[in-house]
Image: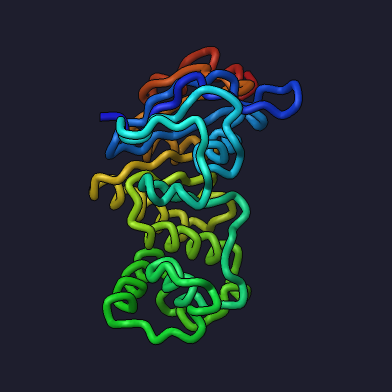
Amino acid sequence: MDILRTKNLLKRFGGVHAVDHLSINVGGGTITSVIGPNGSGKSTLINTLSGVLPIDGGAVVIDEKATLSRIVSHEIPVYGITRTFQEVRLFEQMTVLDNILVVLTERPVVGAFFEKHGEYHLSRAEEMLKRVGLWEKRDALARNLSYGQRKLLEIARALSMNAQLYLFDEPFAGLFKEMAKTVVTVMNQLREEGKTILLIEHNMELIRELSDWVIVMDSGKLLAEGRAAEVLSRKEVIEAYLGE
């Protein structure tokens, strides 16, 4: 069953259609990758689906239960959706551990400084940080982490939401090889748990390794879709994405 569908989804910037009447299906329990050349509308799609940008036309169907023509960013957890950003967004003055506890306890940031957390939340936070290899950094301030560690912490925060659909916007960008392996493991685990991932990524090796389904965008429109090996061999995809 599809966990997410877009129906003629439209997002404009002036006279430019960044997402141009796009209709796609994302199957539940899969990793679906969205690829395309720079400016093809990939990140705009994610921003529209997560409520960062308003929808200008069409609709989004979530889990065959809700049809939305308007999405508000702070309401997406209600629909079982969470996301990461290309530019990492953390609570810089808080420790790595507290960045997770804020999500787990759904407390205001200020309250997280003073709250005594229970064993359950501490255990869950430990689990999330160990999954991304950051447990040993739990007492470090988020602002003092390396770029790669910051991205891993944002992924751990997303995991803490226990969502059904994860929108990952270039999570591998700038990661060292071992960190990238950690993210691959996390994504495979999520799929094994029945979760769904919509992934934006430029690394074709990772696309081939991870993807159950690939969607190719070009100029805001659907150019092609299908299994990775088949889609990436199409002439129109090679011409648009690889510039050949």
